[in-house]
Length: 369
Image (cartoon, rainbow, N blue to C red; front, top):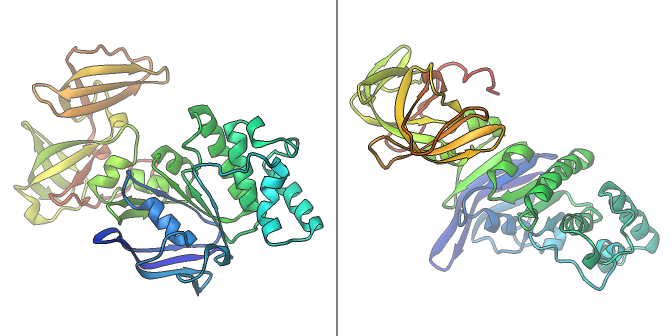
């Protein structure tokens, strides 16, 4: 099995409420990622699922069984932490076997399960080594192996790659994705890194201030963010926002004005939006130097030439408003030299005064899912 249901889950520490009425259903075999900024409640929520934190209110249901009052060992879960938490005096074999020895499993069963887990994780040639002889990525695989041998219904990962360097993190992302496909197990993964979330998840749960801001597939969150928080959090570099005025609402969308330039954004806007200040969202990668329907004058401050792409961190001309631009890698762009960038209305998002997205008309380009 491996089904999880969170029903109005709340966590308080004294007078402070850090998880605020979370509702979520995770189906068997899903890879779900909790993502959000520091302090949003994602690790606390994971620890409540694991039974490491008491649930102040609400229900945690695993495979149709309320588990609020059950200890971690009886919940059918296994958790992999940010720190490897390995026993340095034990071999890789004994570290992986440890939970089975606690359960007093027969030696033949231990040998079979440890050998199988080591083969899956490419540790079969390392079983007699100590953790001190392994790389960071290999140590994390040992920790994952210790979870695998328990054969849990749900795997819980609490920022397991944050201690690794960039190259190892990329490699481990691939390995964890392959592991999920191989095991077919339910996995819930916490990270602050939205790149990990976008590349690994079946669904992403974006948390902010103890609430769920949005749940959806990675490209759904990228193309259809429901609010400015999700729009700014999903995508790297983050989305640019401009204050614009709604001049009219037509069958084609909302006509907005920016410093005398008018363009129709294809969204469903209410009639009372006319005259209001709205927020126009445009992703850095949707900007170009010419050919768009609306143009902006910006001053690049820092320009990063990354080969595949050029990223410029700029400000709007005669303003302190930050504005990021992503261009092809062969595009020449100089710092401290004014430049005009443009974009098309079809690539834009529009948000009302509360930060909620106005629903788009039709599809969002060929890439939409």
